[in-house]
Amino acid sequence: MSILEVMFAILVTAIGLLGAIAVIPVANSAARKGLRNDYAAVMGPNAFHAFDSRGLRNPRNWMAFNTTAGQWQPFAPVFGESYCFDPRFVAVNGAAPTVQGNPNFFPYSLVGGPRMRRLTVFSGVYSGGGLPIPATPILANDWFGFPDDLLYDRPKDLAARQLFDSSSNGTLVTSRQSEGMFSWMATVTPRVDRHTMAPTTECVLSVVVFHQRPADLSMNAENERVLNIISMPSGGVTGGEVQLAADNPNALKLRPNDWLMLGGTARTLLNPPNATPFRDDTEFKWYRVVDCDPEVDQPSPGVYTRFVSLTGQDWNPEYITATGFPQATIVEGVVGVYEKTVHLELN
Image 1 (tube, rainbow, N blue to C red):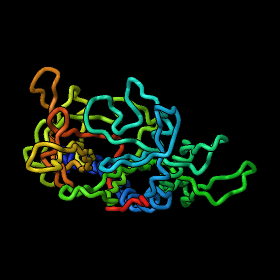
Image 2: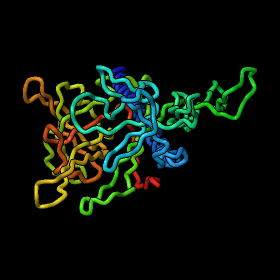
Image 3: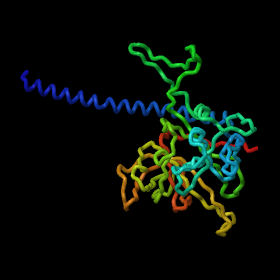
Image 4: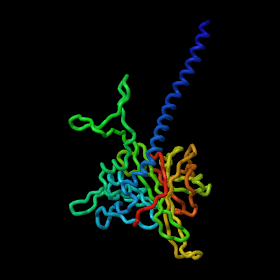
């Protein structure tokens, strides 16, 4: 063989090796995503059982901050309203509004639009004055975190082994260590009979599973983003295509398989066909992002838009907000939303 033939053979081999090496990071990323989705698929249904075991179907275990009394109190639900159970966030941020937002509502953005009350849960302990105490940060992390992503030690040339918590004297205990990457919150949206307007205890319970939710749970423009929806070309059938708008291009940062929540207000005539009297009810539904436009458009100075395709429940195009269209809320770290119909224990 000539030197030229050897050089060509080396070149072909090098190209093949480089192609194989380039596939390794992609395969690792796909494996991580698959493992994360497997975790979420197991943890979502488990959170339904946790919701029941903590007694969260019973409003007597709900707590909110009473700004008038200046203290945490049991919260009584109001017919037709939706609620967000997020004790981890409430335990970190308290109840005092700041220039970044109001932690008593979800989303906490101060921009006008549909909001649901953000609640915490009763810890089961009363203060010396007989007042109920809400869940502390440690308790909230325990109740609304998932310990299923077990932590392993992988020493060189040895089999992997699980890590256990130990006492001060080094004695092993039964509690297994977890990476703590997964957590959850829940939203509850009542089903309202638009025809009879009769009260009902039937609600849609949505368990929102997070992976690596921002650890500090701080209120800023990144962790919970509120976007305007300026058009819905598909009419809201199974979500469909929507056009999102924001004053910052970074707020439109979305990828397929991300999740967002649509919120809007519907006006129900109580004595049709007369225009009055009427009642305004808010509605919130979660959707998975199927596809996004590759680039963000800027139709005018200070306005950025992007088309995204959503899949989920049918969205009623009659839902509006003060701006004339529904709004979308994006929460960082959401990897799955699982829903079921439940009945609240109002009696």
